[in-house]
Amino acid sequence: MTVLRKNLIDGEWLGEAGSRNINPSNTNDVVGEYASAGPEEAKQAIAAAKAAFPAWSRSGPLARHAVLKKTSDEIMARKDEIGRALAREEGKTLAEGIGETIRAAQIFDFFAGETLRLSGELVPSVRPGVGVEMTREGVGVVGIITPWNFPIAIPAWKIAPALAYGNTIVFKPAELVPESAWTIVDILHRAGLPKGVLNLVMGKGSVVGQAMLDSPDVNAISFTGSVGTGKRVAAASVEHMRKFQLEMGGKNPLVVLDDADLGTAVDCAINGAYFSTGQRCTASSRLIVTEGIHDRFVDAVKERLDKLVIGDALDAKTQIGPVVDQTQLKQDEDYIAIGRQEGAELAFGGERLERESPGFYLRPALFLGATNAMRISREEIFGPVANVIRVKDYDEALAVANDTPFGLTSGICTTSLKHATHFKRNSEAGMVMVNLPTAGVDFHVPFGGRKGSSYGPREQGRYAMEFYTTVKTAYTFAG
Ligand code: NAD
Image (cartoon, rainbow, N blue to C red; front, top):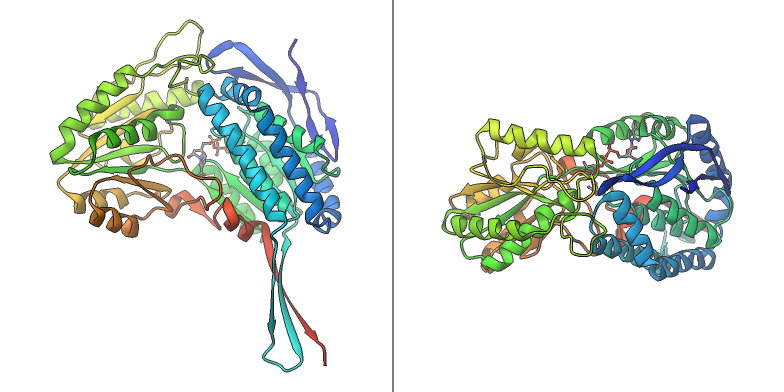
């Protein structure tokens, strides 16, 4: 029998069955049934978070540390089970699902530590006898809206700092991945959060998400998702004069220079472009390759692509799982057709695959002869599709890499210190990788991009404090 997962509002599990969650590796497999909140539940959740804020914001570091540490410990202890459920609902491989779960545990552990490291400043005023204190306080009710592609890590890297710095939360996860969201909320709830501090409202973005955007009682919104939804979040937030933070798409370049180590470059391309089925905002969808290494690089990438095991996410041998759902699969196939119409050569893959169970299987696709002006080079596809853009030299590679509306990550494979250093300084991206895939980042340092990829303060690491706190300057006259 399928279990019904409910929403958490003001400390109570509420709601009737609303939606079913389907395994993309096997569409006959129903992962679970989930309550679907409407505008009324969203309002109740916001009201509960508002009422819980004064006490939680004054709760002090030990209470917050205890909840975050306990949560980290439970996630780590259950990493295999939670990682498996994640792979089952999202379609990334078991190893990727477990890896992401471990990362969530590490994030909670990091922010548990941060609760004990809060500090302020005390400076003399320019006026004799006056002292000035600068302290940080929680912002209030934070709305957290997340996408489907990192179902546990992204909620973790928003919820953990929000709680650590004394905020209360209304959390709306993506419709496709409610199981991971529910699990993390269940663990936090049982770890001892007071009622109303964390509220879960699963449901449609256009309904529940929109109700959060429209509420004057949501003091800040942290959003990760597409550019289109991000713009809505921005417009509504400006209307309400609230703080907001957007992490959106990417069209990340990986530059491969003639002097690159071929093995490293191929590893970076395969991992960056295709792992997690290419469904990462940090994926390397543009492979910008100089002439001298172009043919050797392309042959080696095709050889590796041919050996990749594409199949059921829960099979331990699988290296590339299915696409997340029918809509995303159609988008990938549409872009593959667009690339061919634009004149790029589909040199590998791009066709649907049959496996034992019915699922959304797509063979990873590689385009050659792409130009940077083609739609497949400018628009985010969000699937296992990469283009090779051939360039003359480093200068052209850098210019092409930067010629994009996005600016999340970028990478370069080279053995030249000069080019590596120049690229790090001149790449217009928030995160730059040298001889590493464009995807795959540490959990204790800032994450975020530039241009159309991101807006607002960075996420993760100590930099997260910037968004989840507000500064107070207090003056005291002591005579
Ligand atoms: P999406 O924009 O469709 O949905 C994101 C979230 O917004 C979901 O929870 C959705 O329900 C909600 N939403 C939809 N309409 C809304 C509305 N009117 N009001 C409020 N909320 C609403 O994105 P997606 O398809 O879930 O995720 C894929 C996108 O996320 C890609 O563009 C990817 O690049 C991006 N992404 C970015 C990062 C990053 O850190 N830069 C990380 C992961 C994913």
